[in-house]
Length: 322
Image (cartoon, rainbow, N blue to C red; front, side, top):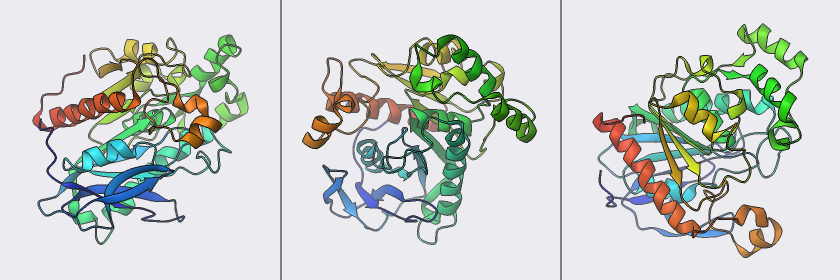
């Protein structure tokens, strides 16, 4: 595994604009980088640059967290682009910072993977991008609700009845998830669509997934992961102040020990995987700026190295879940 940069980070935004959704990509280039701003945070990339020769390159699809946006992990996207990866991030309908109308509801559990699949379809059919994608090395990475999204793309059969059972006992202690628990009528509709209380969205083009503090562990069961065979990396926060440990990180570990790689990041909270906070965000959305004993930039450096090693291990055949 090489930590050395071989490329600059190319960057294009609104590749598909609002129809079907805004999508940003980062990719290997040799053009000079210049200042770019992502939601008020300044970084560097080569805007609208040509792809570097030497492809095709592996592709990483990003799914942002609930009420987030396509730039939530731009720092990781730039890091991977400089090391030979294409990164593509759609902005999810009904669950973004401009429109959170469907946030944390079953609707987005079904919609998000469809949007990721559509983004992949469009990229693989794009006149100036498709030829640069290594179709044997397509991965998916997501944070929080995005983590659940990419696990579903790997084949996780999300069990809405398990969500109901959890919230029947824990509604007062876990309002983040339980305020939107589906009713019996919704579960009946799932039976009609899928033959059970599950939501399936497997995409066999996905060769590995990275779930960063994934949400909705309450809907994870042994049966739901029975058919998941691709390599999985779970990145956990040392102190997740949003998602209860027992119902999420610890539950995923119990279900998947020996089948997935788990890394707990020291000093990180649930939002430590977002960009550094601007003064405006700190003043108006201070909860997004909480870390737990470690500078956010140092947390990001750890995540970058863990993600790159995981992807490199898949390529070399050295991945081992433990």
